[in-house]
Length: 258
Image (cartoon, rainbow, N blue to C red; front, top):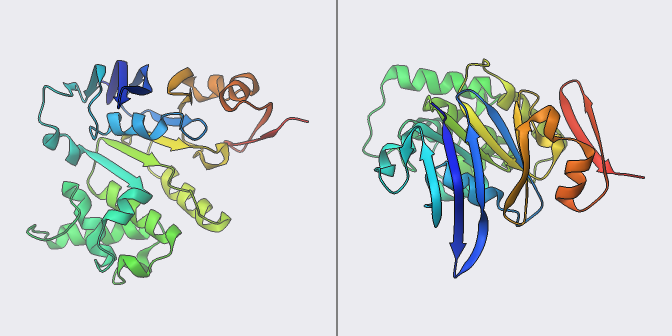
């Protein structure tokens, strides 16, 4: 079963179409990157994939459940999110370890939930895995931007989710923080959960990414295996600029041609 199946979906706001029609299928264990300029529809597409927005037209199925015909509250705990918007919703005074624990139920607060010693041990282990073992007793508000993003990654991993969504998680990070985040995002086996990353920059794509889609003006202009999509011609069309592309050691980079 596909983790996400989107068919001829559109999103309209105040009579204006901001996305679509688009078609996208994210298979089990596939790792996708969505690329495009500002306003291309990446975040809106992520919201459809995360059951956080209903389509104005078309069909969206998450784990085989059609949006509009299922209780989305049952879907949300199966989906992990990493984004600056999520970090802003979490109370800054929550201890980092408790932030990770909220990932189990996709909650914003640890109140009224029970966690046993095994839960706390797993949360601590995940913090260690993303290089944040020394942050467990600090509050989220005392962490740097890069530390918060890695804590949110541990939170997403804690829930044993079937789908992980990343909305520009490296935005605003300096080079060391970005590289530590990408190392953490690349960890895990090939049989891990499906994932979708939205980004502007090829340099922010983890080496484990398997597929890509390019968006422009609310439409997907091409999609498929990452090797077939991240080509100079398609990227130049997407960003409206002649682009040169390089891949080294599994990592991608791009710059203006000439």
